[in-house]
Image 1: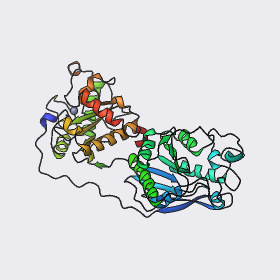
Image 2: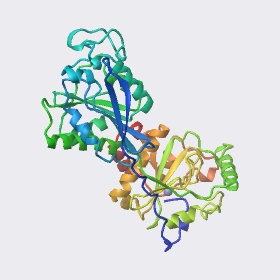
Image 3: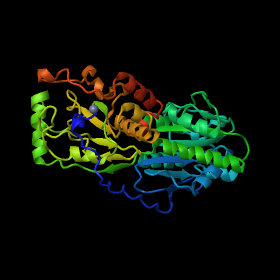
Image 4: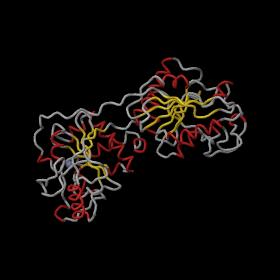
Length: 431
Ligand SMILES: [Zn+2]
């Protein structure tokens, strides 16, 4: 519970203002990102908002004789990506090869051996071109990826029937494997592939190959793979955060700074490079009394200090995430850790109730994972309030407070929370 939990009043009858209205979905937008050796356009199409922070790139074909994935891309044009994400679709990265029904481009080069990571000269079916990134199609893709930084990229090939293991986030490959029914398997480490170039150049982003079966996909297969691609977008979609800032004026900042000096020897009210995320529950049934407790800057009844207590986030029982305080500011939520931690409150009467609430937990895990990715916080430093004293970051100059804690989220509960956290995509995939 929060440091002020005991002072929380019963739920006010006030209803909370409505959540942010969903953004309208603009029409899909296409552009020519480059031209093939024979001058054919290579087109990319964006589906979803231009403001989406997270982009998923799907390439229908790069070998002209492996066209089955193009039908999946065609179907994805008519879908609505999850909120906060946009799809970028390149139906055909090798239009010359497609026109000729050939694996290679018009210059006889296997584009998926032409990328500059671990490129080496190869002949025959794996003809690598005269040098790394020598081909105009390769260059177009590289420029596009550098510009858009897709969080996830899917490359369709044929005909090995597998999701190919990459060095990206395995959780994302598993999502696709589960949804598509294709097993996840390893292939030899080929030289100069698009996937290896992406995964080594853009750390934290994931690119992998899906090998479809030979021949065209039937309608059910097209739907299944389009759903699998969308489930990937859902897996990396940012959580929706409703901003409901509490007043944090100059006086409160000055009080926070004085608190940080007294308790940590830090002459600052700003939270810099947070290392810990602390989970709490509110001992309320609704959000409003939590907000009403955190908003005023008044001494807390338990320790009688200023500034008023707060938490950066509060997660309601329906899964709504409210942000009350910027993560650039220290908040008083956990003795010993306020100098380096982000506090998350959960509306509820017990931690068991929170862990048993699927919507609240889904929101909580996703938010926590995103904060981990953004700030480089490892899962062992996602802790329950009750674990504050055993954190390696615990620091307290006031002797009588060194053993101070609260009963919320003790180790067994926090362990269960961390286990569920580890089932999500890697933190970098949700940064
Ligand atoms: Zn607490």
